[in-house]
Image (cartoon, rainbow, N blue to C red):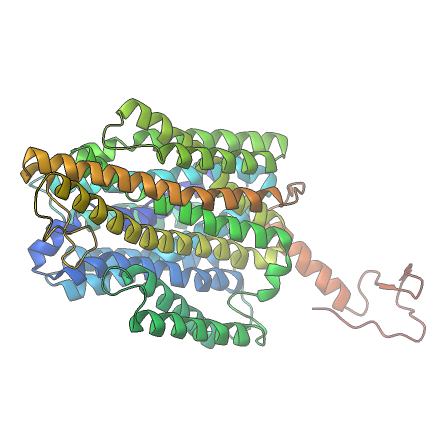
Length: 547
């Protein structure tokens, strides 16, 4: 494909990817209003967020495997259609039960978009040229992640729109993506007569969901050390062990276990998991810090995240262009991991009195690091696997990054809740104010204080508590970024391939066909002394057909 054709196809992919990311972030500032209007309970507040995240994370490996077996374009359009259906159901919901169900449908569609967009890019763009486009992909990912809360805040604050438009706003983008993909994306139809491993898929989804439900609710709905924890962790572990047993014995596993024999895939997977914990777990609470500790409105809080967006946008784009021009990529992974670690360490020094200028520098450093690192991990893995496993490798990285983000958000959220409660109790006692009834976010009542309604002395205590607790989150996230740096250092740099995934797939199929044919091209088999012997004559040995 020419650069123009690639850019045309990318427009549909980017529109689809944007709505997938937006679905998980746009409701952040709208949830209190949604729960109030629907008359729902605090537990429903949690599930409106968790259900979409669970469905997206758990189904990514299945979508990736399907992309190795069936038409990628059709699967991409199907996932967009599911997203549209879920969005419309959510926007018209009159009860919280339908809203939670619609979020599950949204999450399944978003899981497909998350996995398939990167798979399709690898299928049509050679790794040597992929860097420049991967930079754009990373920028879209960043904008969707950080701008979502801003868009949600503006929609909620606009009286003639309201919270329902948090769900409706993605529908035009998804429909536009379907049309653009139909007109611009040209992929050969792939049909392989295989049986999908539904049992393995079920065990993987069930096991992952059990663990994600535990990390989402532990410390909130029940204690970390409780019978619920034992049931969810024990059940999840048993299900995943059973999944490994099944996957190791079926001809077409959802996640091919032998893919982890590839050193690059294993290290990039570990790094993606750690990046998810560090980035999502650390940054998801920045909006809350802006609103509570600094006293900003939801809209202003969203705007204050712009330095991180710009840092990520510039670094991912520039690094992608340079990688495509030079073919060198490891130096940007290492530099990105170092810069991300430094950014998290700098943010660990903030408090309620930190000025916006200094905050902007710290956020920009973090954004620059993430921009150089996150998307290029996928590039390194895709460059080092057979074309037939591109979907599986890509979805594995996306899956572990999403799972890391989910776990990081849940665990760091519990740390935030405990530290805020401790700091508020200490501050109120020092001020001679009874601390009874003070709630930390995620507590039994889920109370997040309205700082505008508090007396000035109490407000200062609350602002200080959230400032100290948010800094602690970044301090906890920093070692995870450092471990990601260690994983990246051990990745072996290999030259970027100059053929696309589809071209490589055709070459691999051609090689297999040549080996399997009796009268095809020359066949080679190792001799006793290690030298190849050519031709159909093999002495007393039989050459086994491959394919």
